[in-house]
Image (cartoon, rainbow, N blue to C red; front, side, top):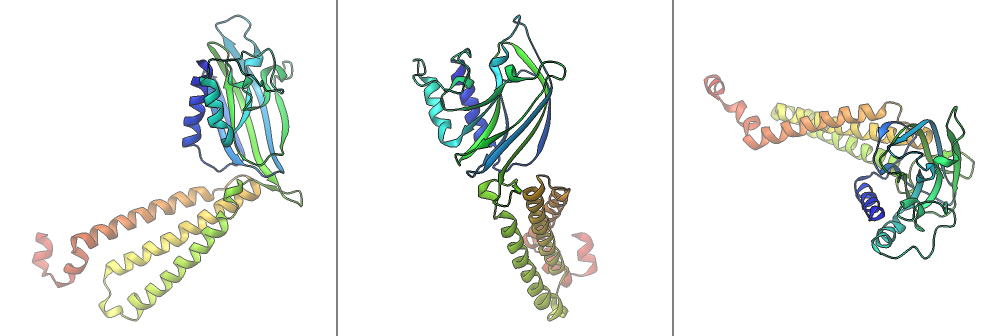
Length: 292
């Protein structure tokens, strides 16, 4: 039952997780969660998972908790449902994972034949510094999620985790974008060009060629298109830097800034058009404007 509960948690994490990965650093302090999702990534046959764990400390109300009950593992989308189905059966696992520790409790998700255990706390270096650093090769292409499992009863974990998930290019460089996201930077940039063309056409026909009949609402619409162009450019740069370096280098902040500005302008345009204020105002008398 405990294994079934853990695997149902994995399904929930899978449904809400994003399909984009980058270099991540996470500090976990006195955490008792049975499963922790770190990230999700689509690998090619030249994929790698780098994990560095340091300052590890775990405590339990049970004397001498087994360190092999705490560890990291990968679970592919293909095997997720099968692992949940297996956990619901009341029979022992007929095909135990050959890479798993035979001393691990069969109810622990780390013993499932559908997961790929990476390492457990039994593999940590002896304190000090009580750490672990290793790079794992992924040869079977699929979309994997990186989890930490805590199967020890009433135990709490404290540790610092550094993860890198990437695919190696033929020239040896790293690609930190998941397989399905490789073309995303180019798509964002292409749409930025399209919206820039729309902006130019709008300015030419509405604000320059017909400037005598243009209203302020048309200027706000031009500002909306301009904000959209900047938003797409920042999104393209954000994904590009993540792909090359693993971090957005501040482009994510600009992306959310222009995303917010675009939303405000869009809401303003909808309200002004919906109420008819932008079209009625030029024809109203000063006294009528004040009363409205």
